[in-house]
Length: 265
Image (cartoon, rainbow, N blue to C red; front, side, top):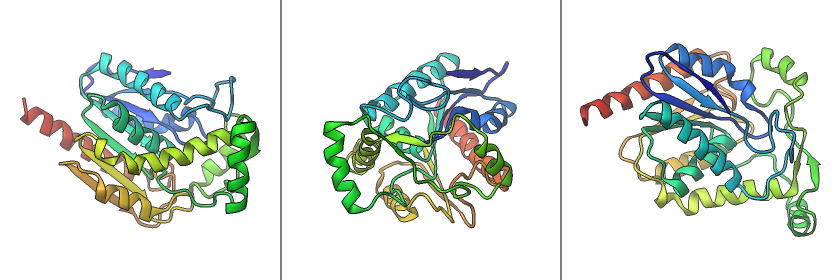
């Protein structure tokens, strides 16, 4: 876990990265939040990033929920106002954390949350993998994410090719826990607490089904929620060439939420 402190913070931001990647890809975003007056707490999810144990493998998606809950606790120790921001699978993990744990936080930002996966295995392979999941859940298989599908930013294309912490293999159990978490995100949607929520979705997402994200957004019962579609942007909206605009939009949402908190005092 990493913590970036601010001397006169107006809140804490918890960042949750997506599948295959790691917290190091969020240094720019962490700096942006810190420069605008926030503590930032983030880290590598179990089996990802610099963690050497069980790389690409989890026994349960609950491992992610537990990790995020510990980051929230750290953020709460720094400031009472906590904003939880998750990207892609990290967004899905944030949703499941909210549904299961009901953390006492101020707001949520979901960046292209993985509520429907494009380019998954065929039905035949999926069926076979169900059997393997029980016999040999730790079996690792090559990831199918094609290069340059996450962002149009050429700086990240070069960086990712030389990044030793990006996963190229995940376990069969990991895949099935991912799929199960998506189903649970919809099945338990009524358990999502009434916390201000911003959903930002890439308009040219090659990895996540936009209609599934919008479906979840329309169904979730939250008093203050916003949906922002970023036309022409690829999946990793905070890495796109337009990321300054994306950040400013997220910042304005957070400031609006904090203002509402002040009005309620």
